[in-house]
Image 1 (tube, each protein chain N blue to C red):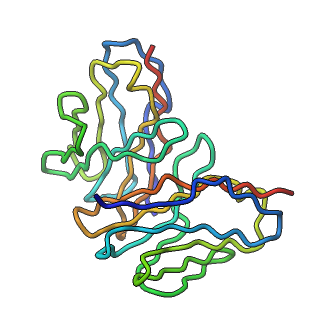
Image 2 (cartoon, chains in turn blue, yellow):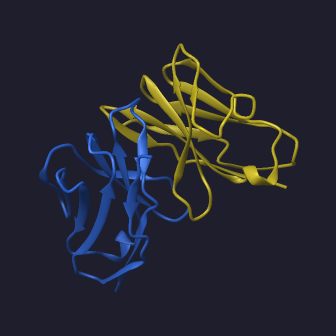
Length: 111
Length: 112
């Protein structure tokens, strides 16, 4: 059974701090990794994708991938109250292009 | 990224009836996916819909209950048949573009 695990939270950080979200996956053959943000009552929104080991930065967001340790993380710098949402980790194992989803981590950024 | 619309955005239906949800994309895409999301839960894939072939259903989902059409590269429908209160959920379509999945706004279904 291929699995993606996330800490459900809630993760609470003060405004301006760095929020660190983590995700582990079980299938060592996984090839593509995605972070989605989902506001309450809205659909998931893709914020980062990463395919190779290392860091990928996009504005205040940095995705980090370590295939040897089978984890992917998302760092949010200078966290804002508008970042308060559930963050979903999704992994593509390469079979049928389906994504395996984590249960999500709830993030609360406190003003 | 693709722009995706879904209709209806929400509906309240009586048990035993059926509802068809439409998903329209502003560009041609090969792969479309239908998901269900229960309140406070993560996403559950119902089926993958490729144009020109039968939809591929995930374990626990069957064609008689969730028939899917994919008549062209920009459109798909999901029907929820013979509904029961357990079918109350948010239904989401997504499309794959450049190996990334993008979601429509969702359809909130309540079955009474």
